[in-house]
Image (cartoon, rainbow, N blue to C red; front, side, top):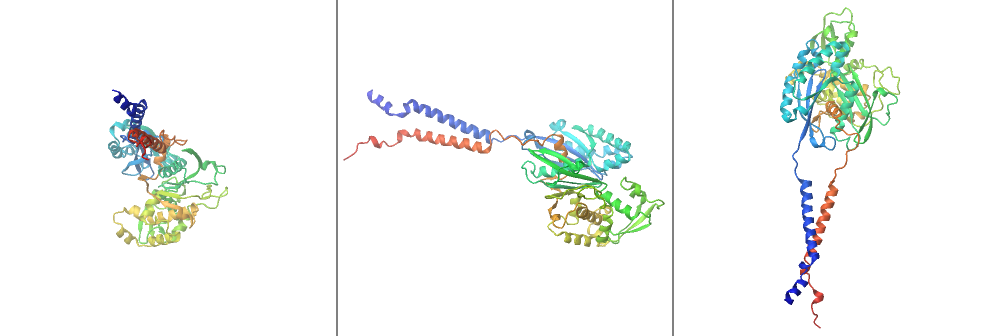
Length: 497
């Protein structure tokens, strides 16, 4: 009996401290496993959606955006899920038959119903923003403009989504939202990096937007937009030139060449051998040129291509006014513009035209770009058609003009030099999403970009690693202590002398 009692006294497992160590060890193991499981468990991802219709001057496009539902205003980024180009012209072309404007959207809206999960239909916001084409129609005939919007709204209200309205964007909004899109997709806003300027070229207008250290808005408040995004303040310079999209600019150049009402013009902006009969009324039916129509002009004129880049550039320069500037510096038409700063992303028609001409590589010297374009313009029209049989003749015929106009707009209009031209990157998409104003517009209306920097997560990665490390060390110590009965008891063994 005394021997058993002596064994219990010598066995540490029967001591209260051993029980405490065991309990602490079990609790630590459970806590460690729980933290690891909760931190690393795969969560079923839920998404929200938004739809924006870009009603441009030449066509309408639908964009579907998707973002993690639990990260609306934090770390989740909205990305383009799908796009659909509406068949037919822009909605402003349906002024005389407004119902057709609404009907034209039907096919793309049906696609949207397939792409957005049915359970999300009712909560998915749907927006339509109209740009320069509708701005011109509204200037020319506000009654017709209102009729088109009523037809479009009627069609969109029948969709199963949460329709938020249709309206005309101002040129300033179009430029600013394009800038937001480019920098948001590139994660420059969240990380507080140097921002990228935005160059947008449509059919009826063009926009330039960028941040300049020299611009505080005081010299031209109408060109200033202030943002506070992710805890950073931005004072953006932006301007939209109505009538200076590539389609309306072509009208301006034709108006310049037909001021005397001729029956024939030799146009340096079209390939040699090109010939087409143009109707005077069709050229001058836009508010951009309607007040310039020559008196007593014939019904039509013949346009023959000459294919001379340098002469075309001189013709294009005539659509800009460089003689008047009441500010310290201007771009053109008396519009203030600060010194260019930083990299620029050029999208929409900038990309499509320069990509067709294989001139998107801005590491090529500007003079070489001009030489390549001059060579293209001088190529006979018959050869151009033979090389591009799948391109519609209307678009194919205009590439010499469009390329020349883009280079002239950038260098003569916006003051890009041979050195700063390399700061431009012609882009179509950024990380899978189309560059343009639509994403920035949706982000603004859904308040998805916080004014202040997002809060840190409750358990950041460093904290998680620290907790796991401490618990692992504690368990190791407890394990070593639990092996105490096996420790050699050298001090208690008799020594042999």
